[in-house]
Length: 237
Image 1 (cartoon, rainbow, N blue to C red):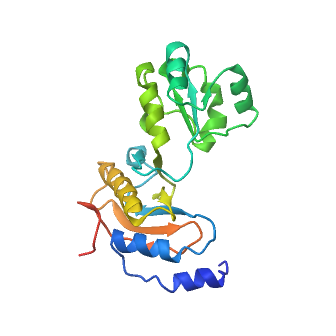
Image 2: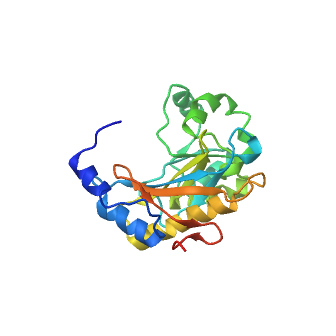
């Protein structure tokens, strides 16, 4: 077990085994974040799903009303009018042969890739480069869109969103914001993420989807969070 420093141990001493309301958890995470840099606030949810079954996998995208706290660079795979609309809407990159070659050489200096359906066949060979970094356009994450919807998709990506994906241990990890955000901003982002998870409950999962949840900063200790599946993150009853 790794040893922690004095700051971490002092922060951990302020936590407990009692699950807290969203308001209390957010306030405590902000208070005890030990690093000097602006740490990311993360939600970790242990679920009762079985990721070995495809129908119990959870992969969704939650909008963040106050963004992620970082600039989102958007790559767009489109041609013709859709490409022109993407450029006008603020896309950082419009894929061409040179950019595709750069991606094949390992370049991925962007956070989101959007594609129109007609481009998916052309970029299929990029799957092994984009897929391992979670950047391959996918209809389920709202990144494969019709040409007329390219501009609105870019606007949504620029506002901020977080991908919700279950790992092999049936745990969901999602970014909620930054420690520098106000408590109100973090709470609204958290509510959006929790609501998305609750609504995404697979039909094959019987009983409660959420077994436990914690909120933490990048370098800080976990703070137990109570989530009421009927109403999102709230006070424990």
